[in-house]
Figure 1: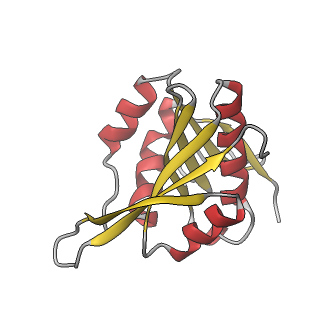
Figure 2: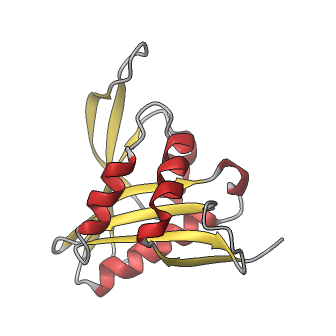
Length: 161
């Protein structure tokens, strides 16, 4: 199995990021324009992608994650892992990279929001020390599907690494 490498997201990654987003979150994916807007907000926004070491294929990402660095609390904007790469630690590596970036920017904690029905993501976040803060009832709404709650989670970074 080839090694996974993390690197900063580039403009040329945006089409692949949007494809991964659609595959990972078919109920409510971000459009490509959102990724353009997110990367345009650097350095406040920080995005990392996971690729196979030595891969020359710019169209395939194993994972991606983004962070809003806005003070003492950083917000995770998105974490997505390709279905074929799940269970290989890609999500954990992406989270660790975001935590390191948040600490480097001066953040004491990190917050995120996750669908209550996303069991895999909830397990990952719990294993990384995230704790529930509150629930937003019926926050996620998709056409033809019942609303799904959003869970707001927080991880303390300082003194709890």
